[in-house]
Image (cartoon, rainbow, N blue to C red):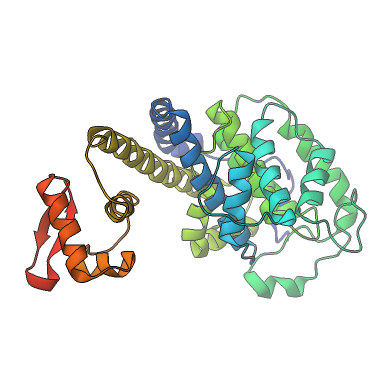
Length: 355
């Protein structure tokens, strides 16, 4: 009896129930359109700011899913450099991280181009190709059954069949199908994950590949959401559903439903961030002629960035390294200017919020 999905007769021709997917797919497509519409309202500087945040988050979280922890400041510096942005804080460019960032950004910019074996080998080379393997070789390591115990997952074990699997995968990937591009992205993620063509970096490359396909579905190369961040939030569920797909038949409806809901959550979070950024822009436009000191500007921006804190005079003093009396004068000045209001409590526990 065949144990794994890639041992089933008919692999890799996967199936799913379109009726079960139709509603959530419609919601995803609707949210993609709303996000694109709001993005059109952003000026160039604001658009670069949100791209900086989302691309940085996506790269860090994708690496985190692979058990790695790149320095956030170095990732941010490389993303800013690629976007031709100037950062007030300076951070040295790390060549390895810079290559990782360029792979992500260039892959999405070239989303109309076919993905070839050379494309994948170039991505792997930029991420740091496997020691002991030639740059243009697929995985050479046989995966034993004992590896199932590590994460509950087992991938195609025999490396001898990987070149044929990958040629078939890339031919399918680059062929135009009637399948919705978002569904195709979910199928591609699953197929690539189970083939596991390289000794290392498979998860990262799978997510780059998925981002390319989702960019095709969007129709413009602007990364305004982070799918990797959402996968991180649901990592345990992600692993359970992958395991069930691995041990199941060729029907991957459950996986695709989870993929669509995960993508929808990423779009919702991105739309909320974009809405907040537009409101922040309108706020500063409204108060552009109001004279504020550096401490006041800093704290207002912290509130707009969604800092989960109780804004008290003592918190203000700690952040700005000033006296409690100075903090209180700053706050009272903003209340008079109708920028802040008292929220609750009294005395030292009094909290303040933006109007």
